[in-house]
Length: 197
Image (cartoon, rainbow, N blue to C red):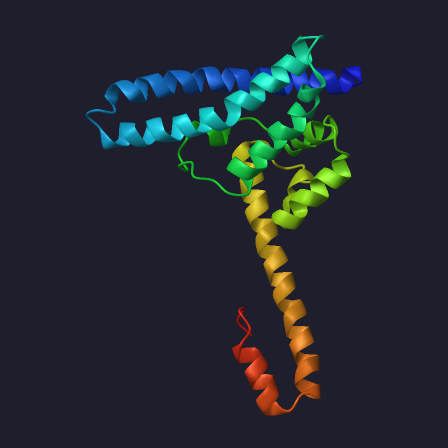
């Protein structure tokens, strides 16, 4: 791992550790009030989820960067952290819109650094996630995103564009099929499609 990449990983790690320290305090505060307040119970649940998703991956990255004798198992830590961010925050989420996690300074460049520092080639890693979450590659190339919320917004807009592109491709194919098939067969085909025509 080159020094520039290692420095960037240290910056990402430091930012996440600062955020997790604040999140632990928020969890403790919500846990004290949870008995009396429904909002505090929601806050505690959201904080618990965030901590359970991020803490193990951040610890792995910390071990990789700060313990020279860390085993080869930890070499996948950057991509595991990026995977967690994609699966739990960018592509799908159960975190309230008002939560502080959305203000976390995390850019597309940070996501690319994590992807490039892992064991798997970054192109293969991104291709794997593009198959599962179409539009995620557009997110990693978005230079405007400065927070986790911006990355989520970029993903949602890329997904809308992807769906619209698929719909127009389907319409073009159905137009060609309609010209070939008899009307009754075409109507049967269209009635069995899962997507609206």
